[in-house]
Image (cartoon, rainbow, N blue to C red; front, side, top):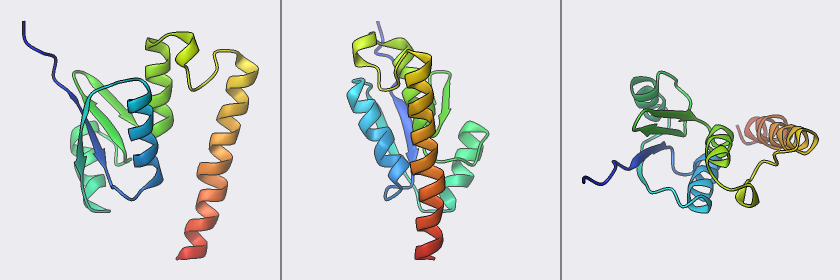
Length: 116
């Protein structure tokens, strides 16, 4: 029997979401092969591979997940409850989603503008 194909993680390596995806995949013991690209070019490759310009992109074996939060949600559903990164309870899950948005979009965009 053939070993299943590894998933590919398309990244722009210094991007914090790329690191988050690596950590999420390690947490869930998901084998993957990283495909690192330069900023800008990574979005073109993501558009071709995953029909989205969003990076990081996890793809292969019928999987197409753009962004670290989507990767966490997907593998949390497949694993045991005690290994979830996003709580199953609605209130706690909503709090995690709100914190994710605050730190990754509100604060992240402010820092990106500050460093521009």
